[in-house]
View 1: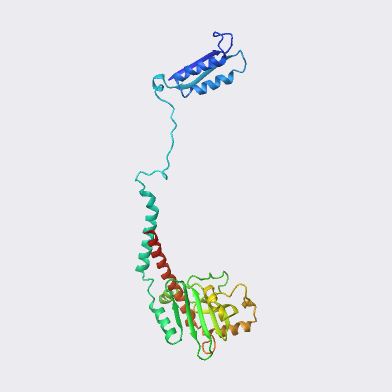
View 2: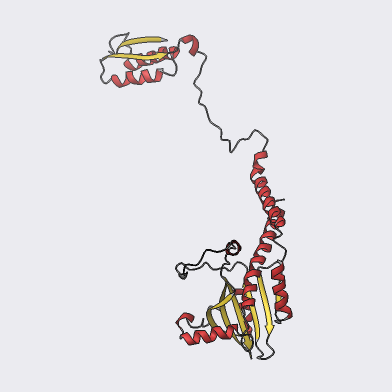
Length: 316
């Protein structure tokens, strides 16, 4: 390492009438031979000190410079950093890693669903469907490629044509604060505790159309714990049935019916009773409400498996 101190007279009358700038340039050339990278710093300091035409400037440095032998063959090189996202050492194999990962997870989920046999109709649900179709006169219409299930029945006594439509994902979260206070009970037995561990069903929205003589009563309902509860009642014509069954509501430009909860209590009860009664009403019994909730859950599982299979086909 070389430590040095330089003294430079910048008077234009000395050094063979050499101008200060020429002297500085000479100084720069000398420093460049010693330390190319530090010469610019020293030169800048010298120029800043030369504010008049005749000035004596002391330029000193305590910096440590490499010897000339080690610097003459070492030019200044700027180093650039490459990004691992842009450059790869495996000829582009990483470009498919995200796809491969997604494919693996989809295959895992599909295998789990198949192992759990989630696409097979549960025996309990099958028995309930058979009872409704054989004894109750209901016809269940279910297309594999759609998430909507329909049920149809015509009452021989009243002549009402009843149609039910529900989407397997049209669930409704329970409102906070609706839970009723329950009196403390005695500790449950092991069998009772096991029964209570079953996950409670989520309320599902469904639409009921009761038609006769070209006019239709439209009930929007919720099924929860095997009970159908009316949310709204509206009117439509039989020409609107297809649209209502697909959308679950009457047309937006039609009267949506009164606010059901604001009706007189006895009128609400009369509508609810008419909806549930099988003898001379619509016939949405507890069995029908339970079937709707259970079948929607089964239907959602089958739709999910189809979703996984179709995703894998797209990526394969």
